[in-house]
Length: 372
Image 1: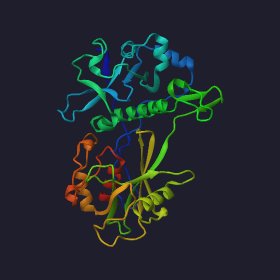
Image 2: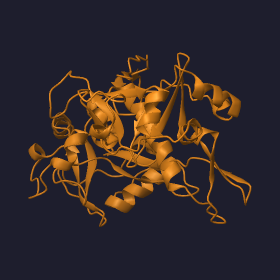
Image 3: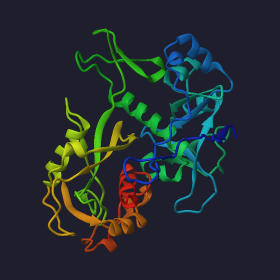
Image 4: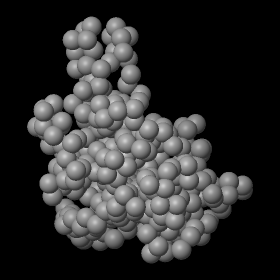
């Protein structure tokens, strides 16, 4: 078998002390670990250096299909329905067979550079095979328990460091796919710097991957005894989370957070009360989630009072710490979100839940629950 499994172990700062009376807490959410790959802009912008890296026998390739699902394998650590997954990296020879490259030059053109680790160069390339079962046996062992997985549904099944690399790769590939034409003149853009820059030969202008910043807020009452959570109309019944929204042009994170809460739930917050907690690159597609806690200007009239809300928000209500703790214990794994029933309204906190540890919302809620 020409594919090999990642064995990287990285040391990351998993805990951090929060401000005020907050206790220490863990950054559990997905993509929070720093990417173990050195991105090396100096290499990807140097054609000669890339030529050498692409020809290096130790270089390895990650395979994805046109839907940006990655080829992963079951590690055998846990049984179905949620087996642990691992990343498969392929030699250049195997990757070339998987994409049916006509020649070495086309293989190199279609490869995007991800970075370097311990002297090994890593790339990703699109496979021409939509299913792992269709791949030649000299590329993938038919007994490898491998398949193309959607990252959003499988992120909680992956080691954190590997999920971070896959999230990075997915964001880069989505930008390449979506950003095909020059927004000024309409000409097809050239892909340069081994997948990290596009160039318009007509306008002589460079285009780089776009990141869209979003604020996601844990809204708490002035006395810190209640938090405000909401459920979008597109979500399954009983699933609540922190309010969130895109930042607008010329807007600061505190002002964006206060505006979004007011727009979605008609609750006024003080922008100066904001506490920036953590960030999360969210590769669906290319969002940067800015996690924060913000305080409402007034306490709600009743502990379980539902709030008014805009059309996009199906429900909004305040929860106590004990209720939020129970919802954390019933938190929803990413792979199960789509399988939850959507019939009937969840009447009480015993039927409600929040996103699992893969989501930064989980981190924000857990931090508030554990605060004094």
